[in-house]
Image (cartoon, rainbow over all chains, first blue to last red; front, side, top):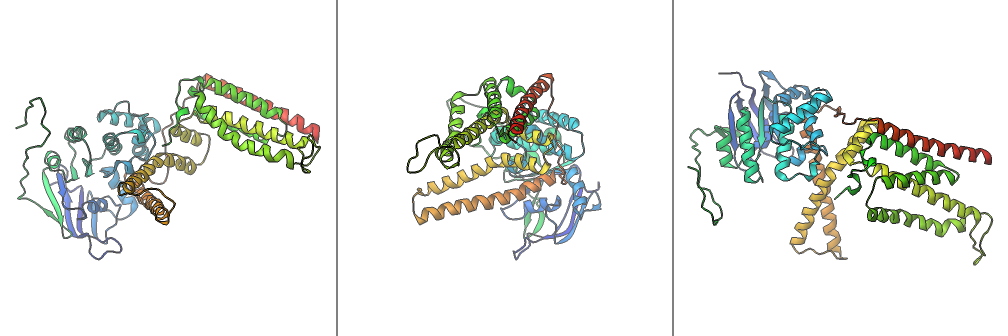
Length: 242
Length: 256
């Protein structure tokens, strides 16, 4: 088996001022090539898990290892954040610049690219996501779907080896959702996806986990299957997928 | 919310490099503000009017802003001429008379205010906020201020939307503005919620910045390119500023 990109052993995390740890002895290895779906009720610790892995939260006990090396300090986690891109749940939190191009170039500039290289990188990433010409547009004038795609561009511009996506399809229209599915398929990067959107999970991931009582549980018996979709009746007949 | 109607346009002023416009505006405004004779602000007012004309700004909007500024100036005219000691030029009314010095001072302030107003309107208001942030950094304003400005611009919209959602939620449940303790408490709660959410958001934004490799230093795309036209414009603006300053200096020398 290949070496895990990221591994957790005995990770415990307790939010200050609460009685029960959200994560209580989590052991987990995320290997290259894996596409993991993470589901479960709100507050079960899915986002906390991703944040612990990215070093945004420090575990009260246990270890985080990135490519075998122990990650403890902020400096250690900087390497993790260059290797793995986390797409936050709310695009507005992630887009920090008033204009799209400046925002997408933020990560590349932080990685030490020259302004010229960063501009090229940002433009290429926007083009990759079908957002040609979005560079000069104002962030606050983007639609919800466009914001999501721009925030994804900001993550992808850093060329991450793997992606963590926190409810990427929440509140998106079907068209933008399909675009994200096809982008992920095209990229083929290993990923961990938090979602309640089963259709999306089935398309984007292969293995399913949930967090129960602070423990990460794999669901091997879990058989995802498609359901009949619902739509308003129209005047025109249309073809259903198989 | 913050629509910048003046910042877009095809005019020759809009095409000038934002850094140059910023410097020109600073130089002209400074000379006008520091002047002790009324000839200098008059020269700069003329320059400001010419640039406003060149920028082809929508007249209605200019008129509205002009009125707003001069409403303050009008108050000065109500007070200054009558309170400045000097030679009376009007008949005393209940012992109060306008003085020559008072009228001169009010005139000077009026000219200064309008000179700065038209310079800022034509040179600063025509720069879109994101470009202004970049221009501020480029002319040596500390990163912290420039980014404070950029982030404020970026998130003011988000916070405004958040307030809008809260206010809608309140209205949907039957809240109507009124002069009552209940209404005041509701507004206080809305504002408090906006502050709390803004604080929470700032934490998430900071996390998002860390995720993208932020380590305390800001780098940015260098997006400005100045051409010969920009240089000519800057030189012309600085020449006006220097001429105005020189005029003021001779006046000042003559009086000392």
